[in-house]
Length: 389
Image (cartoon, rainbow, N blue to C red; front, side, top):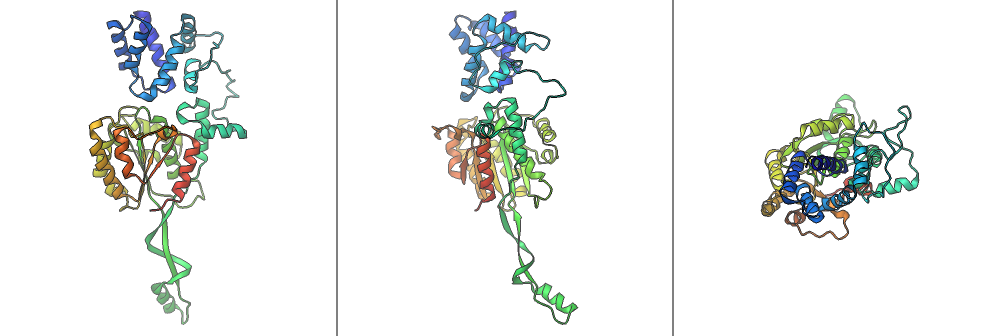
C-alpha cells in the first residue's frame, strides 16, 4: 500500500499539472476507497479513481487519457516518476503524445530540450502566419504552457474600444445647437460675438465583469480578467479610460476591481488569486448573483447604463435553485443596459440547453456568445465596440 500511495500522489500531480482540480483531500479519499475494495480488477481500480478524483463530466476524457498512459505498464510508470522527480537526470522518455497538450506537458515535462539560461525566453513572439492562425483557434483549456504565454501576449496587444453613449452633459463643438449661456458670456465680453454651439458629451459604456472561477472555468475566466485589466490600463493615446468593474464568484462573490488596476498584468492576476479564497472550487451562481444584485447593482451599474459580461458555463451546483437563478438573472437584466452571457460550452457543435441553470439563464440574456479561443475573444471585442441597447 505504501507504493500505491506514492504512485497515487504522483498521479495526482500529473492531473493537477494537466488542469484538473485534484486536491489532497481527494487523493486521501481515493486511497481509503482503494483500500476498502477498489483493487479487485483494473476496471474497479479505474472506476474508484474516477469517482474520487473527477467531479465534472467535461474532466472525464482528460482523466481517461491520463489513466491510460500513467497506469499502462510499470516501465512507463517508472520513467514518468523519474521525470517528475526534480533530482533525477536521465534520457527523456518517448511515448505517444496524448490528445490533450497540457496532459503531454504534465506527463513528460523534460521532453523539450532545455535552453541555456542566457538564451531562454518566456514568450516566443516570432510566429509565422500558420502558427498564428492555429493559435487563434486553439482552445484555451488545451493550450500548452508556451501557447498560453503567446495567447497572453496576444491579449495584451488587444486594445478594445467600448461603445459610447450620450450623457446629460454637453461640451463645446463647432456645430450643433446654440449654447445660450456661452453666447451671452461672449457678448458680455465683446460687442459682437458669433453664437457658441454645443453637442452632447459621449462617454464609454461602463462595463461590469462577473466571472465564474470554478474548476472548469478557471482558464476561460482568466482570459476575461486579462481583458478587463487591459481596459483598466489603456495604452498612452488610447483615449478616455472606461469605467470597468470586475467580480469573480465560485461559492461566494468577490470584488477584484482594485487588484486589477495594477499596470503589470501578471502582478494584477497574482493579487486576484491571493484575494480570492474559493478559486477553482464549487459553483453557486444563484447565490452569487443575489449577492451582486443586493450589494453592488445600484453602485456599479450606473442606473442601467452598464453592459454586464457574465462568464459561466451555467452549470449550477444546486439543481433545485433553477427558479431562484432565473429570478436573479431577470433582476440583473432589468438593471443593466445589456446582459451578455459568455459560455465556453458553445465550443461544442452539439451543445443543447439541457442543464437547469442553462435553461434558467437563456431567456434573460441579450446575447449568448462563445469564449474559448482568441478568435471568439476578437468577436467579443467587436461586439462590445458596437453594442447597443
